[in-house]
Length: 455
Image (tube, rainbow, N blue to C red; front, side, top):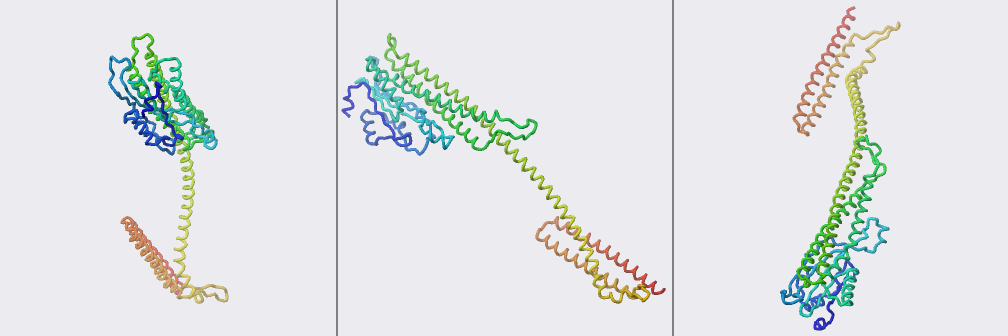
């Protein structure tokens, strides 16, 4: 600890790295605690260290802890150097992840990765020394800080802490412009596929799109772009807050106001320019968000359009199948009616056929002259046949009645029982009419036979 304080350099930089972007910080807990106690750093620094935890993929947490500032001792007006203070902040930056080989097997792979860097700075008024602790710094940021310190040392210029902070943050602006431009290009490619697609016929309500094939993967791509844009709004909002806090502290601790060679105004102006660029990027992200919402909406509409087109085809096929089923049903109904008629005819002629079989040898006589005559007692055929036919029909009706009654009990519907009662009554009326017709035919045949016998 004494060795650290004994260093003659006006600025000391401690860098803590990671083995890779997914691993923890490459430092032990004891060593980091020793560093904190050596310079009496405020406990708020842990808020900036904890996000550098072990990860299995790209982190979904893009928010940064708020800017922290603390006075180690009060500012003394009679002291030209001001009081001692410390601050900490973190910011997100974007870099190429050097994984272009994965683009060959996975075209949707994002070549950009969002990283984070935390900065702690302490100014000691007693020895006019500045201490920087950089956590997972990017190479351009570290090189920019070292170059600014070396240039100030060579020229004999006094170091200004806020100028160094401005140089650190300025290294990330160029990559953000390229990143937003890449998102705009991805969105433009998806938008052109939709807006420039040709429709076969503008008059048909569900005309297909010949050169456009849409699926859920297109909607997923737009969703990923939308999530990245929303992350940008959070990142730029946090960065803008950090720059405004640095600008305010720079005004507060400007010690050369009124001097001819005061550089504070230049630092404040540089921070103002960076804030304007962040605001411009925020506006671009907002406009891009509106565009991606429009493309997502039209993609959703086109997917619904394709679904409606598919449903229309299914409805047409269903309509055709229903037509075929209706034809088959009508044909089955006609066949059932024909079978029913044949059954009734068979029931009517079956008894007379049986009786005729018994009396066939004595019913008809053919003499030597070829004259055909009917036996005197042929009316007995009708006497036996009519009751037998009536008994057969009655047995058939009783069988239908018992079957329908059993079905009605199983269904338990009063409407079914009412319909069955009506059908049974109508069947009994028809049975009475048939019996009357058979009795009339039988009486007529018997009267004709008596007249022939008398003649």
